[in-house]
Image (cartoon, rainbow, N blue to C red; front, side):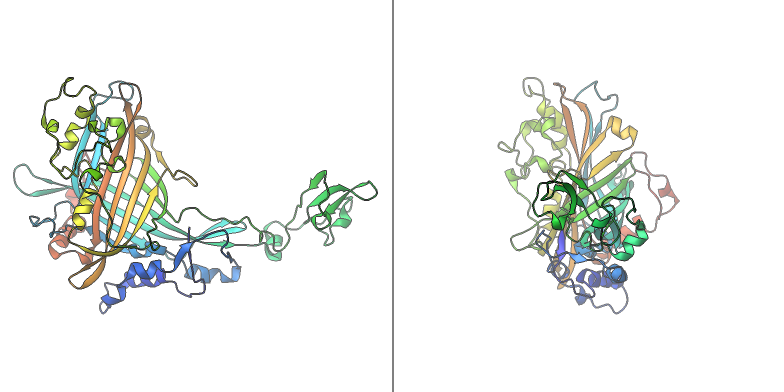
Length: 515
């Protein structure tokens, strides 16, 4: 986890920024006061290590601790974020076509697990969204005895609509497809809460040593609050002694203390979380998620200079970001023999394949993904983020990386309802979230970009192996007050001025709830 370097501040930077964000739309607010947000937030943090001093907890300081809750970089999320299209990189856009791209792979109709391998339905759509973050006042106190942790909690609500063109006209159709809510936690502020006379008496009560206890005289305060060790004394007789009198002698038995002493717990062990951020979410398909993660570290700390880096050409063929997994045959390509996603698709994508042209059946598996009208984003969606950033002046950014499965340490997880678990088991989720500082037209503001990859497992290959099917979403968002007026009006029409017709969402999407 990350720790605040200066523990003496009455009001930390994250609270100042959170306070400003909550009032930034009020008349008279100074926009310049919100400049350099990421730089202000991240300058006060370093990694917490075992050698670092740990803060003691005292009951009389509880209100001060709660008032001084730390949200970390999550404080920058406060507010309402909406889809943003960069017209500089897409000058033909005269309306808000979806800024986001999602790819969805589902079992093909007529199939079920264990019958017909290699059949799947593929969909790739553009979408718009409204994503609202709201800082929860006060710290969330996790009590663990000698270890205490106060978390900064941030609620989120997400509404997503796909964007398509009506066949009969050029009009755009916005269809509700996803609703989600949940919470981010900044896992910080670990305290040591040692036992006191007050807590010892109140939380259990004190039981004096029984008069019949043969070792009664070894407890000078009259309570069994010492651990005793059975040793041979100088006369060869066994007797119990305290740790202070053990003096390295061999012992034969231990009589554990039954009571605490004031100060117990001060010597540890201390809890050092190996992750700084968690995300919990409820997805209406029937899954709940817990992701754990941390901030990526650049050359000079957690605030990384410049824009996020995305690959070009052949270097973009990386399976960690593709809608095509290795278990799907990889389109007959590999990272050492890639498909250039900045060039037109290979000719075989548009051919009728047979056993001579595709003997391993790797190309026919993925042919439609490369032939999709949204190529190359249908193959590697985060290239849309790369292309959106072209021409922008992004001075710095913070990257949050999270996963439901981690190689080491604490683990998140996914729980599915029985239907999902049986037919489209959702087994893993990874997320990259970029918070970026953008300078434009003499102003400075934040931009939010994300890539989410969810792995499904259903059916199997010809050899009986499990197939991993990536489901990916990417989008670029800005605060609603920071997008062009024409784009803002569409967001208002689609997410604020909704009528009864939206109450019955399309059957292909998630339930949609009118605001």
